[in-house]
Amino acid sequence: MKKHNFSAGPCILPQEVLLKASEAVMDFNNEGLSLLEISHRSKPFVDVMEKARSLALELLGLEGKGYKALFLQGGASTQFLMVALNLLEKRAGYLNTGTWSDKAIKEAKIYDDVYEVASSKSAGFNYIPKGYDIPSDYDYFHCTSNNTIFGTQMKAFPKCDIPMVCDMSSDIFSRTLDFTKFDLIYAGAQKNMGPAGTTLVVIKEDILGKVSRKIPSIMDYKQHIDKGSMYNTPPVFAVYTTMLTLEWLKNLGGIKAIEKVNEMKARVMYSEIDLNPLFKGYSVKEDRSNMNATFTLINDNLKDTFETMLKEAGINGINGHRSVGGYRASMYNALPLDSVKALVEVMSELETKA
Ligand code: PMP
Image (cartoon, rainbow, N blue to C red):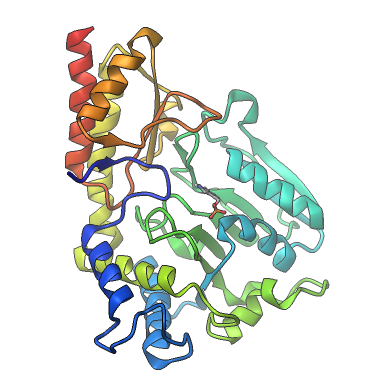
């Protein structure tokens, strides 16, 4: 039986994508060769890379607007330092909303001066700070749109006169936004896109070339752009599977269509958390993430019963991150509403039992 997969990442992918990806591993495009055996410079793979790049821009509404999409390696964590290497000349402003922002700040500090415009660290990152200033003479402003571990999400983005860089690893392609507000977006693939191994970077080209330092080629966005995202051997399987997921999303009706489903899933999930007296949400209501719902069981004595019931219902991956504890239901694009209903049913059954 296929489980209800609430894993925070790597996470659930659409079934049809998994099927097509597995077929391509055996025989890609009826070429008589596996996707994993062909040259990345061969036309069939170059076509895959180009399609993945153009679908990413199309779905974000960024085609023809001066942006380039790249599929790089090293995870979102490598972007923490690539952003700084390519854009940080004197000083940058960072919004600290969780473990990943904290890590991004730490890496950028290696290269130059970083200023935290605001932080929710002292409150255990259970809210998104608002009403802070972003000095207009900084090189860029960096934020994290969705905080995977704590379950908070930026519902609005600040007015920003300098380039805005955003780590969208855990909510990219899940909701409509005016993506033209951002000058650089990055996202690890392993949530709404595909398997771990590639990272999407979307850059407005005109923000590059402004730092005086020498940038190692592999870390230089310009090099990757000039080489069509093929500076070195790309992670072919991750890029191909991401292309399939982006096609799947386009066929569904794009971000607008999936956003409605995601909102519905979040409504069902959070209303159970709020109405069931046995549970308590972790983050403040107005900043709750539609991707990762974090909550705790008020009475710890019910833990074993609850977890046995979850297991029996085939619910996988809802343990909270080790730094937060409790539970985290991750509801990425490919998670069906029925899985959320199955989880909510277990929670309400626990209430009747308790
Ligand atoms: N940023 C966010 C928001 C994340 O959720 C994660 C991973 N869960 C990362 C960065 C780090 O990504 P990676 O493991 O690809 O380096």
